[in-house]
Image (cartoon, rainbow, N blue to C red):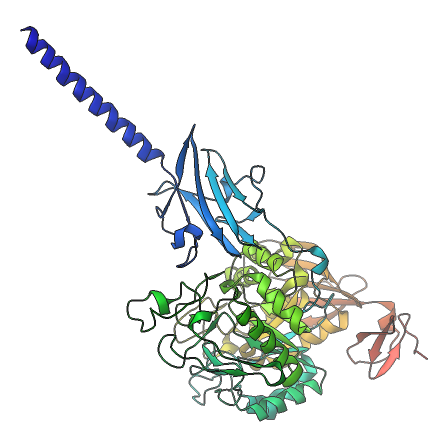
Length: 599
């Protein structure tokens, strides 16, 4: 009997021990945490895994503290959240700057940038997330901010002089007119030059068919569907004769091979700036050429980790490589100093760290630069800072506020949107639609009012949206189908903007918005404009103002300064700076700011 009791006790103890062990293991499993973020193959960030909820396990340091260190993370922009491995994602609301030496942003994900390679440690203690770098976060030098590419208080208006497939001769595709170089030269250049200050042209180098965003040779300007080099030079000359500046579409995130996945690439000949021959070793390590099972180039030499988002359809250039950097400097210098462009629209800049965009602009010194950073406010702000504010950025958050409004009610969407809400209007290129968001064969979508073969049916809403676009600070970019369809009206709105002298940094005051009305006062160099929109808007003319435009659902009122009113002419005034003195120029005659003719 005694032996039976001992055996029974041992069995009970064994079962209790096993039970307690299972409870402890279960507790540890429940309490485990992970880091998930925008990793990419070949990059140690998040162990090279892209948003895998249980991809990067944190280590239990005891007392509820969990940590994960990623070694030698390269320069770049990064995002992450801490997860429980199954369902919970902890983001910016849990981040603490107090315990971090890396500055982070974000509206949901935790976002940060690195200007130098270093180890990054993420920690979580159940209440707060900390981000620590082994070298700390070295922000760009503020003394280098806005050195190039960002004119101050700029009054210019931009035109995107193409849309998707608008090089085609197929009228079912080019319902808003074909926009090859020859078409612009023969049919539109004079009118464009009269009304616009900046013109954005499509990629000019040889691409893999069509629009040209999978470029195969930057320097071959005769092999594009948009037209030949001689016609391009003719177009540049004609636009320049009107004082209009022209932006080249610069695609340097990726480069397309001419043979195999990454077996052969065409050389780029930039004349006196040199010839550059890309090889597989200049392509990022995480590119599909080295990771896809179907690739014929998996065993070729490759470059370093990507510093941004991967483009799956083309070979991503390694901007950490000094040869790639030298090529991009030569390319941008050649485009300005030899071909005659005045600035750049940079494609897919989320694909590489912002510091490289700044590097290339400082080398080529464009008059104007704008970055396609298709993201939310905080990521765009981080990108601009990484680029030392030596570029503007397309204001995608404001664009999607247009989509929320849809030319109807809910005018609250238009109150202080996008980069303006952060005090960054100087760096904002505002727009309603572009070639990507309007209509594409791959249905990328995101258009303002939907693709319609007869935009005239949407005239009221489109003109109302363009009125808002053209009366607000930032640099407005008018979309070709809108301008082509409603040229007379949009040209008039542009003239009002220029008459008042509304500029990229104009102050907006008395801004009110509700379901069925919107109103704001905008201060320009030459006076003020009041924009009123919506069915419930007041239609009485404010004291001291004159009505400049009456739309179906909006009105614009203008009050010009005394200096401008003294100038007896109907021409749109412009301000010029000559030897440190500011003048008003109208009809070729200079006037001082008090309205007198200059000697």
